[in-house]
Length: 200
Image 1 (cartoon, rainbow, N blue to C red):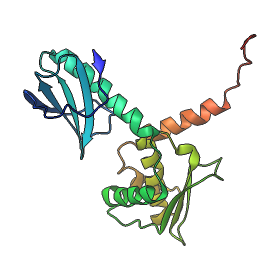
Image 2 (cartoon, one colour):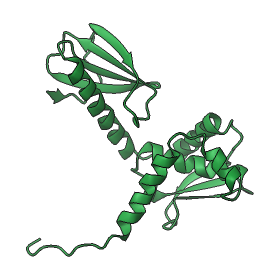
Image 3 (cartoon, one colour):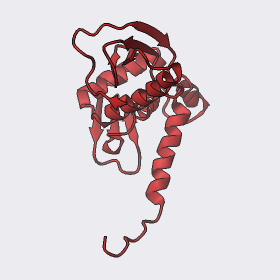
């Protein structure tokens, strides 16, 4: 079975369409599987609003369908994580996250990437309403970047890391997973680097 990176065939009409919940941790709200008699071997997927459309051959079994949905969700997530958001996109993302998880109460005046933060992932200045994210986050999964944004947005409302602050963070469903990811990155950086083998 080959993976087709293109969104879809021109004029393709699905034979059967099924909607399902995505695998845990995919970060996508809904998955729609479209079976087509015109597909014999290829599988492809693309985003459509808050849904992911997965196109598969009509003859594929239910077990194969489940496996390929997982494969394609992972593939899309990997592609999206490589795409670096610009400052304006980062600001739009922060505005959307504030509306979704903080009732729109956190309103930053600026959100941007910086290259001078090597010991922290993000920072904010509540008096100015400015948020800065470390360039080291670029290329990390979107849910991790979103977590850091929500974290800094919450600081615009609560300056310290007390119980009130962490209650705000509870609204973001992937807080623990994102924190675990970042802790793993920090731990990996502290591991000793093995010397290269001879001839390398």
